[in-house]
Image 1 (cartoon, one colour):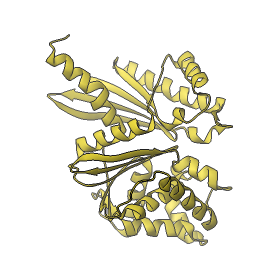
Image 2 (cartoon, rainbow, N blue to C red; image 1 turned 45 degrees about the vertical axis):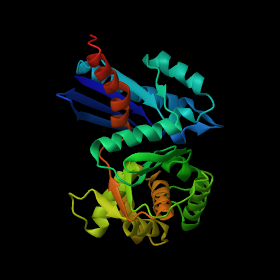
Image 3 (cartoon, rainbow, N blue to C red; image 1 turned 180 degrees about the horizontal axis):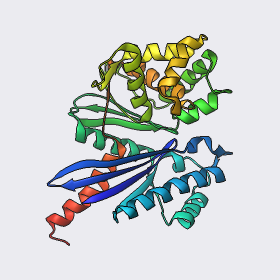
Image 4 (tube, rainbow, N blue to C red; image 1 turned 45 degrees about the horizontal axis):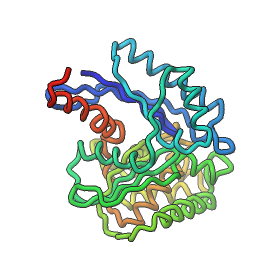
Length: 309
């Protein structure tokens, strides 16, 4: 069975097609559209430009699924729609233009599904999970392979950079402003912090971009799926430099994220410092896998157990 999952995110809109057979899940297709919906917010609402971008991506993915005769699919939205004040209007517009009504995932649920997805592909014992999106950041503390605390912060790579930066390339002063914003948000969680969570599992485009940059700058093996806290610190320091020779090579490695890269890396670096993480592992699985397991696979298995057609 092939099943499509569309993730309507604040920066990217993604289509994943999963195949479930013989009790195993396999990702058979993955497509991405950078829509930058978090940059299409005005007075707290998603603009017409944002609606158009979302609908264009959704209709494109619908056409792909139809061409491949994949009839079953689900669409969910995260901070892209949950954090706007004209949500119902936007949902009605999307339904009218695409025939789709996305499921809105709220923050704690997004974090929980992230954890389910990552746990499906990794042996989790104790650590921190982070999912840096365009409009929010999800955090999960876990011990003995189970969730201890989880939260969603309404600050992501794209909206943090938009809020803090006047130009395209953030200055040192603007990066310091970003640091204050994200640390204030972490403080507001009012968690009793333990700063010895050595291992971090990271989900999302920012984290994958950070690994790609670390490989280029620090001669990390191309097969490696992790990097360390010093790598993150060094990358952020290069972004803070006034010397173009320091920061330009970073943006050249991942030019498509120029409007969100600095914001995302600042979030990553501050969370790493706050929880005392030494190693950042990039998870191949994330929220779409978690959604498929929790929403779709559980129903299939329940039907099978009850001998339903």
